[in-house]
Length: 254
Ligand code: 9WO
Image 1 (tube, helix red, strand yellow):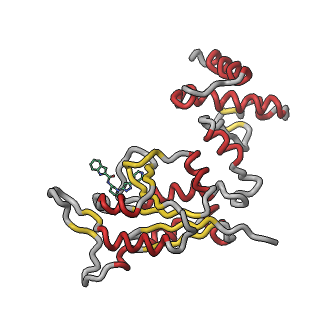
Image 2 (tube, rainbow, N blue to C red):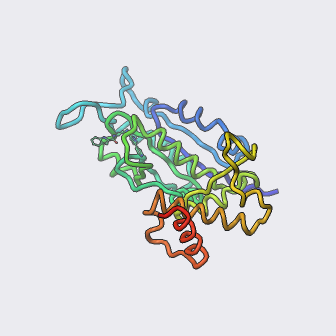
Image 3 (tube, rainbow, N blue to C red):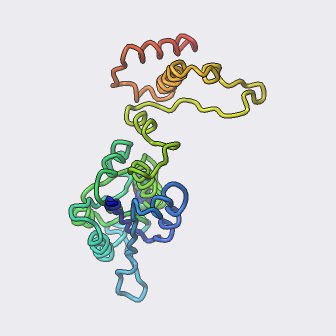
């Protein structure tokens, strides 16, 4: 049996233990055990030479906080990049980056490797970005204490798309299709059939697979219209989708 070479990911972080621990659980942990992906870490502190092992310094121009200095970061990035296939993009996760979404995850899953730099303090010296970074990505418009959680989000979204990572039961195909099409998920139900007087929708109990598919599509479109109309904005609906959305709006007087 030939084995595809695993996706290679490197994370440059002052908290390698946080990253490794978080990736040990669940679906991603299993993918690591099964050799479908490998994640390495590189700690800039290991690339310092002074007694205090300092990785930060005061900002030129003044002001509060500290900035990550260039040299330990540059050598840490080079050490991590040397373990990756040639051409692997070096990505800085930062609030100033392009918004990371399902199609960005899809692209990363198609690469042979990539590097993520997680910043701390007030960020990294801009010259490090110019010299050692190829792309900058954000997971959303909020400030975090560091890039580690954002890097973990990107790794999770990416790794679950790799062939063989999800079982048939949890298959990402429908979900990622919906996410890429700009649709919200439909509502889910399990036993009991009645809970605190709340019934499971009759369509889901009907055993009529065509009716179930239509109900789910209608809910997906309807909820997207109600909660995230921006996602529907540019999409052209086919005639069935348009009819189902019209029905949903009619039923709820929207
Ligand atoms: C934003 C900002 C806006 C006005 C003034 C100061 C500001 N600092 C920041 C900021 O993002 N600081 C970073 C916080 C510095 C490096 C560590 N932090 C962080 C946030 N790392 N990564 C994120 C992040 C957020 C969303 N998506 C990816 C990464």
